Image 1 (tube, rainbow, N blue to C red):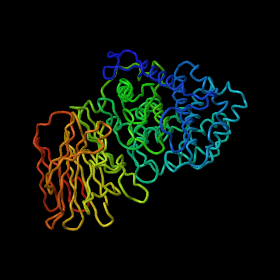
Image 2 (image 1 turned 60 degrees about the vertical axis):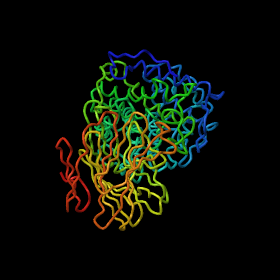
Image 3 (image 1 turned 90 degrees about the horizontal axis):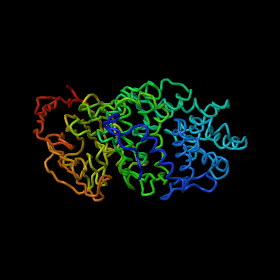
Image 4 (image 1 turned 135 degrees about the horizontal axis):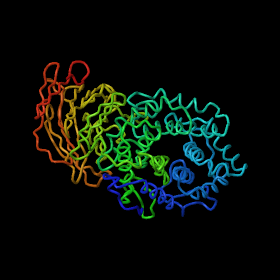
Length: 579
């Protein structure tokens, strides 16, 4: 467990964290890995499971080196770099695996290169020529080998930056990498992580971070700075009042790396937030996981999971050193101590100021938060991670909603599907149909011959889901709500078409606890129509208002809330908010 300075509630009334807390946390994380260095300092082999790459020792070196580089470049003790300098004498072309096509060492090469750029005067310039030559020979393969066709294209860009600093040819790697990500930009500051619709935290901690660091170190600023600002304009609303980012997508064990994009905005001078709000968001994310040690082992190591160890939060590539990509969250240490992001009094984040209902047409997402409890929900009508060859949905991508205080269960929660031969179908491929203030819509194909068109409308802590189902008469339809346990209230009420309500036990619980329950509704497609509507609520605050009324006409569905607010949903052609 980290021993942190006392909270400073005068400068940081929301988190208590100051720059001293970030520095102490960085030093503590670095100290905790020291016993696991190899004798030649080139590897850090942490206890725990191995990744599929069997590259875990290099991961431990590279990812903690990035943290040490942020610390030293931000004014920390250069002695932190000494074991990494020693490791460079033995790692490249020796203990480190070579960089091959689509191989894990390419990922780690990016962290090594950025670390060397940031600490050049302290480390690189003092290395023997022979060590420099071997390091460049190892890194150089990243410029020509083929990356995985997603955010990996930015790893050669990171390595190319070092070559450029040294006056060496980058063999076109910068131009190739930046050109490749252009086709994935969909607007609203969002990139898909490769072809398809993989929208997740990689947008912040990869797609924006690497171009931002490259710009900070002298690379092109545009269009990356403007896109970063566009992303941040809404991204801050996705942090809970308790500091947590949304539990959604892969690599969640990187945790407070979610703060990296917030710091990048300050670093490039494009943040849409006041400096006090920016620090509140970043410090909230880090303190959420570190202040009480919930993300740490007894030895002070970052664990493989979200809070503690949690297998469903992992992927096959997750190994014992993987969580140290969280080092990216310490990017703010590059800001000088007298920067306003460090000296300004903290101000509240967007989720604490007012209810938010931000529709993002590019990724097909809707950020939905409530100030009464500070809880953030992410309504999903566009993030889709289809398994190769089809099959079961990925629970980290294809649920209808995610939040900062719930996680998916093995029993599909926040799901709409058909019941065929006693089994609930996957949601299937998602096609976004639009998004705007307070709403988002999509269609999906549970089977090749069926279609479900859906629109979500949010109001206060509530979401109304309306579905039009194209399937044979007699087909059963299943809708589920939030998987919760403990203090949160999760309700699922029928408004139209659904009849039977049940509450199912999630056999393995969720990342937030072992005893989760999932509310469910069932209905049947019949000759009179195939429209279904329900009210879905997740809240930590008391709910006293009555449910809305839902009326279906020939071409319009009308939703009326108890406060008089009315939404009209067009039902002719594609579903969507009509007014």
